[in-house]
Image 1 (cartoon, helix red, strand yellow):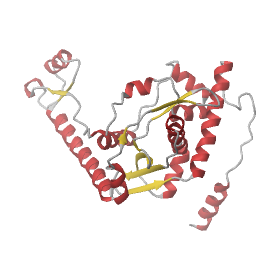
Image 2 (cartoon, helix red, strand yellow):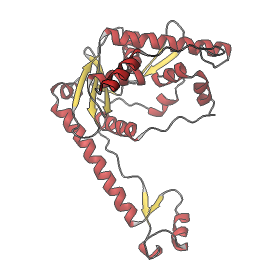
Image 3 (spheres, rainbow, N blue to C red):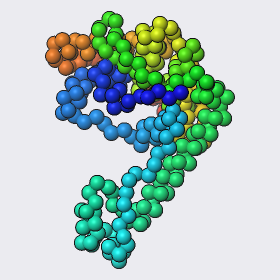
Image 4 (tube, rainbow, N blue to C red):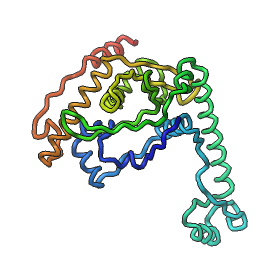
Length: 290
């Protein structure tokens, strides 16, 4: 079942998302500048765009299409097939709302689109071949793209989350593409990209709105050969850690909002940073040739 999610409405909602909280925790000033339109949000990377396309394919059956374009007649091009002629420039000027391309550019677009379609289908095949991923993604009670909006009880701040899939009574699931599906890589990405906060927000939103607790499962698919798939169910320590980061970020938001001063907790301080223990281990491994 696919819910009628209005993604623009979700994105434009003033409720704070996991991405917002991550930015607030790292730099309140950056978050405030983004909200005021002074800084543009970073454009998604190619890997992120691929992940979004797979998500749309799995949850909505939407295969990406070739971008709109219009072929420039060969007669208008130069002898070498470029757009450097007055006639080609005029053709482009007469079609301002669409990308105008040469035949070679169109061929390259078709090749790139075919390669993209192949990669997406390989990911689908991998999901289908994994017993548990396939069972979850095809469960008869599944609800795709299930938006959650609620108010945090401690801070009275509106928050939101958008699980890829919810199976009431079973689990909340999020699908991710990655270059490394190993448990260690997943935990590293969890810390860096706040997946633990995402998992906590899934559970907390569902609990507040529906009054029950659901486990959180991440389905990972490698975005290149061999396109293998792994399924991870996170434990209570994982979501508890996410809850601590969630609470801390919300507290930072409230402090900045109340004081109208968007600065970090360590603003106007000299901060002593501690050398992480893994530096010493890494140095030892380098010296040992490991």
